[in-house]
Image (cartoon, rainbow, N blue to C red):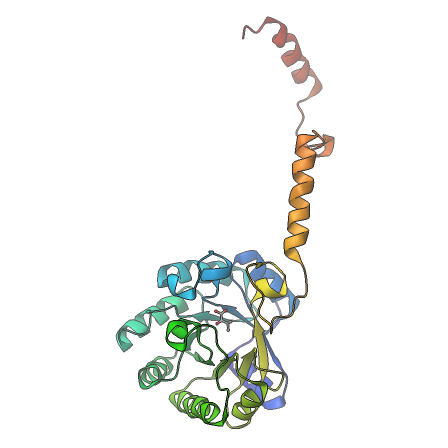
Length: 285
Ligand code: KIV
């Protein structure tokens, strides 16, 4: 098996300038493909609430569901570094709750947890999780769990003062022990400025090219989530069209009795088959 990616490997990538690659993942078979393709990190993002479960926001998923999806991904991913989102309200009630829930995700196969925001309470959570040996990825800029407070899907850090506020929070999160920072939907100049002024890798999503790495939602790059595609998501495949076309071909084959064919069925031995044929004359319906 290829060498496992660890926090140390990620640090080395950051120090040598190798871009860190990350995609979201929600299931076993996709996890296997991501691992085989050579991705550095997989993120069991709470975006799964929307793209895999059909909810309208990420608020609607809880720790129990995140545990199930984490276990599925962990069964398929053995080389890449698996990060799991702590869902809404799983780290906000107390540091004890945060530790308990983060610990359960680690038991399910997470190597690190990701938490959103940078206020004083979040910083104390990051400090505690780091102290008990749970690596933490921070998340600033647009933070979907704060969507209602932010007034919807809005670009963050849109001027000098707001960029400086994100930078201050990033520095505090770094000091508290966060080993990596996701920057979502911030202007590219702001992301570059923040990246240059902290000492941990930044992973951008809608944050331009000058971050230490990039993350996207896998359903977006595969063209699988058709509700909407954000401006920053590049589509590398069109799974929706491919899948719909395959399903239509299947329906057509079933309706025309061209599926299954001889190669796709099990057969009785000839003499057993003949017995059935003989019996059919005497069997009384
Ligand atoms: O939930 C998620 O998929 C995320 C990424 C978009 C960064 O947090």
